[in-house]
Image (cartoon, rainbow, N blue to C red; front, side):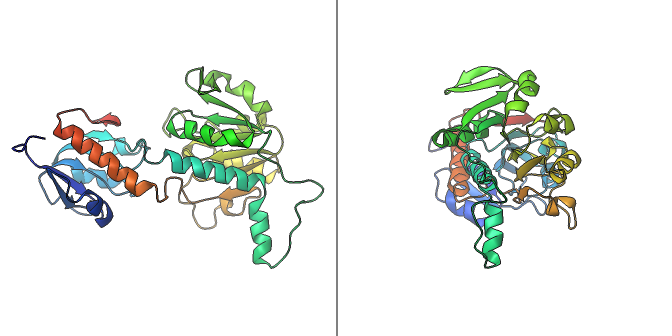
Length: 314
């Protein structure tokens, strides 16, 4: 950056990100958690808080902002609350690996019946490997279908390589990528009857809403496992509950609809369900990666280059 270039002003929502960006040349960092009106009339980059209602984005009304850098990958809800004239980038490259780790964790925990064994431990009871007459299902040799083959889906596939599972994927376009056969979405119905584990890694939105409906679930073989680390809106919750209570399939969900799950909701007590509270990207990998992404955006802005990861222009 030229020595006489203007200093970039970046707002951040917390002291951690402020500390991570402190001391960068040509950058002024301002704390703003978007809980109230903007402390400045203009910002070069605004970083909203992580996992906060997208309604806070309405506070950008009347503020001169060159770029809003989200800390999340998903952005379908943001579009409804952004004022006009905003360039909005998502956090691709930040959460994919952590989310893939959780997808694998949920899959292994459900297959090897870890919740049953943890419950036995809390009761001081030595549970056997068998439940009834059968051993728990393996991940090895299982037919796994990843639906959605973007950053998260490809990261999941990479982690499945060492488990000797038979992995294929579904996306908008058929292809072979990194040795994985990727089917087009219109082939999905023919793949489900042979699929033992389905992992959802799709974004939300109208196009994917309730993709997993009663017909989808009915097409799966008995005792199939549904894993969702995409968005809760992908799954018809009522249909899923019917199949869970029938003992037809099992599920391991990090995202659900509704979210958060209300007190007393049937999801809390559904048989065959492992539930985590939308923590896919919440690991120690996040903080250095979001700081790196914000630094990258600032450096590109200083060089007069376009930002990366732009997903909305309102």
